[in-house]
Length: 112
Image 1 (cartoon, rainbow, N blue to C red):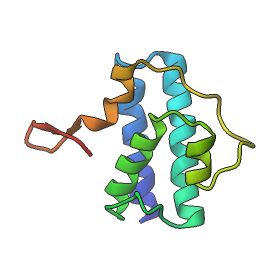
Image 2: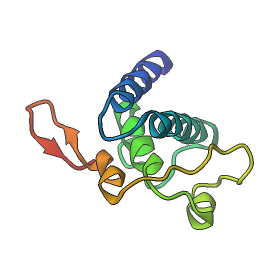
Image 3: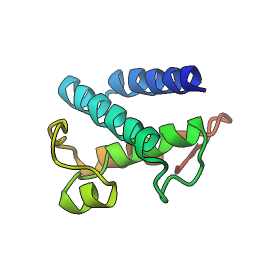
């Protein structure tokens, strides 16, 4: 399961990194936040907001949470301290919606 999860994470990071929607700096910060959020889900146990508790669900959850503002309220609700966190990303409102455009496999986008 971990190899499949790592493959999904790498695939998502590559897709986002090559997206024209995020610049190079934003892509690096996206990867750092994504990995930290996914690691915390595996370390602490699943968040109640992680509805589909499988590998693909973890990827969707981590991507969606990565694109949110990581303020003190968000940190507390996710059980994270402010230590060892990547810098916050500066994103446009459109960039914050990237995780709401998943391809269902039939070519049609859908929210998480």
